[in-house]
Length: 88
Image (cartoon, rainbow, N blue to C red; front, side, top):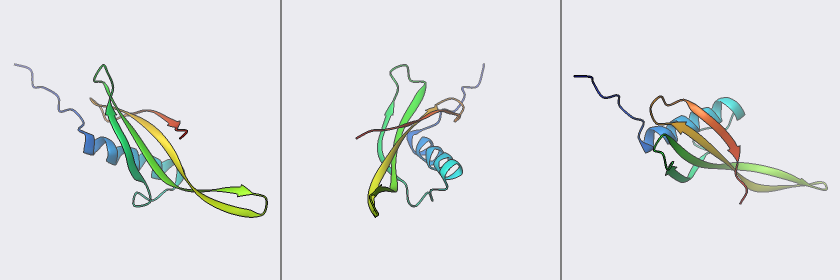
C-alpha cells in the first residue's frame, strides 16, 4: 500500500511565503503580516497574501504605506509557484 504524501497546511504555507519574502526583499518575517489565505479551486496551491511596510516618494516627502504580495505555494511540495503584486 502506497504511503500518502503529507500536504502543506495553511500555517506551513504562510511560513514559507514569509521566508520567501525575507529572502527576496529582506523583509523581516516579523514585519510581514498575513492578510488572506485561500486554497485554489483545484486544491493544488495555497494563495497567501502578505503585507509589509513600504514607502512612497511624494515630492520631497516619504509617505508610509503598506505593500501587498500574493504568493502561490504548491500544497504537495511547498515550492513557490509565483509571487505577484497585489493592488488594493
